[in-house]
Image (cartoon, rainbow, N blue to C red):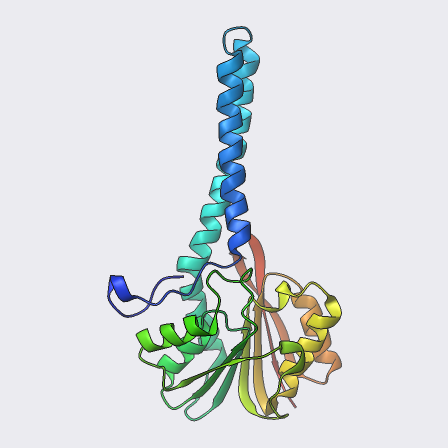
Amino acid sequence: MAGGSGTAAHAPDYGLDSPLHVRQMFGRGAWSVALAIGVWVMNRQEYPGPSLTLLLVLGALGAVFFATGWYMVWSSRTAKLALRERLLDALALQDGEKLLDAGCGRGAMAIGAAKRVKTAKVTAVDVWNPLAVSGNSSDAVRENAKLEGVSDRVRVESGDLRKLVYPSGNFDAVISVLALHHMADEPDRDQSVRELQRVLKPGGRLLIFDVAHAGRYAEILRESGAEDVAVKPEGFLWCRPSKTVTARKV
């Protein structure tokens, strides 16, 4: 996701979410259109009616795939920047507070928070899954933080959300955006949610944004004793209904 401050040649790049799925959409679109044209060319003389019908049907299918791919790119490149501001508004980070961005990708949320609250202490942690975000790496976060002028306020660390190394009650706020659904197993997601709550200070705020499993995240938080647990629809991004889950640690 390109955007933020800096010149066009040196702008931060927050990557493309689910790059494999985006490539699949464009690839299926190309194959559908190619097949449509091929069938029509080979059969238009002998079977003009049916070949034209297949051309239109397969062409329309290709257009749907292309549109889906474009919408996923738009969600990453444009919509996620606006989403970041809404989520940070909801998190309401205060001066001097400590924030954990869990599953930070290329650092969009962590860097956005550091830009907003200059006295905040922001930690960005991830396992750098390349299927989650294109070019996903700790170096990408550091480069984006440098371009945004907050490299001195964002601490970048590698870590597994299922077993965070931080002590209990360490952070005033924890945010996790588009990270947990990449875990294939429900027990891993459940454990990660428990860990996010564990590292919060009493009264600390947790915000999870995702395109799947929001109801389950809320259930785990309630079972773990969190208060003010709420699930809020956030629209249809990345061609899937997205939601935020917010909670407060007792």
